[in-house]
Image (cartoon, rainbow, N blue to C red; front, side, top):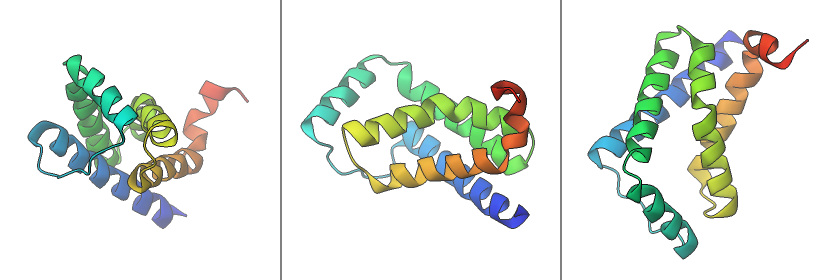
Length: 122
């Protein structure tokens, strides 16, 4: 089990850091999303704080997951972004990498559930 958790944690950390780098430096060429998804992304881009805050959240969480310190904080910090990615990919644009991202997150939550026991009760 510890090896599975390390693989999930490092995979998610690498994905987060690469995504944060792409948010700030735009080095990955993305395919054109559907019209509704494109309109939604344009409206998010109009609010200039959304993408930098996602980038900072991904970078901080990826660093915490890499360092194996404060994994619980990293996973709690990521929850709003994972929820956004999941809803976006289910409703507007079905993208396979987004689903993998959500499964990596869910696997880490499952393997570290003892850390969150106080949040959900007994």
